[in-house]
Amino acid sequence: MAAPAPGLISVFSSPQELGASLAQLVAQRAACCLAGSRARFALGLSGGSLVSMLARELPAAVAPAGPVSLARWTLGFCDERLVPFDHAESTYGLYRTHLLSRLPIPESQVITINPELPVEEAAEDYAKKLRQAFQGDSIPVFDLLILGVGPDGHTCSLFPDHPLLQEREKIVAPISDSPKPPPQRVTLTLPVLNAARTVIFVATGEGKAAILKRILEDQEENPVPAALVQPHTGKLCWFLDEAAARLLTVPFEKHSTL
Image 1 (cartoon, rainbow, N blue to C red):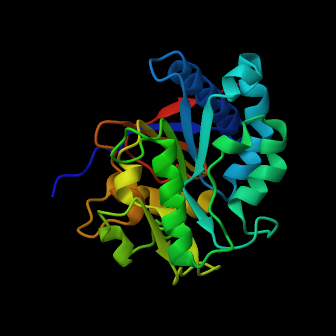
Image 2 (image 1 turned 90 degrees about the vertical axis):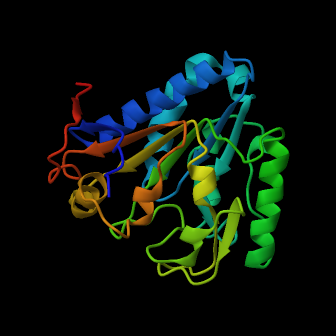
């Protein structure tokens, strides 16, 4: 079995330098999209450590473009926990508190789940909202998706050996048996991830080193979910710090902003 192309791997000396470069890339991608024929920028965010990283770096990176630019952003979430927005596990809730309070994206263009619905209905409702936001696309095509990867190789709420990895029809799926709590979640599916124009995986820390070596170097018969993200026509990038990249032997670009 031929190994998939690993994509462009960028390694930074610290999570802080990674975060600064990630924010600049988001700003550049937004400017490029807004200058294009569609004149909008569709960004999909993941939770976890990305919330604090983007909250720290992104407002300053996009400030030069001004509020007129941000008014044409569409923001979605790659997955979400089925908890109230004021719950500590709510990805949207954390972004609302730490980032969106400093980033004037119109509320009508921030696409969220309805956490008051049962998980199956919440997934259908979120899919409907995405289709409305991406009218004209047979499947939502994000300009940029920022994904994380777990030590087990999961990304979004797509977990190893889970039936959702075979989903090809739904753009959003419910999950009620997440091995990582809370168990009820709503997630984008692989067809949406692989339709994106650019996907960036972000991973930091020694705890990610072993799984990254598997994803980027091993040829597995049963790849972990993150290894199944291979955009059909888009670009795949990996942003890692030195600790996460310490086991890699494949070529990568070393970056330093200092």
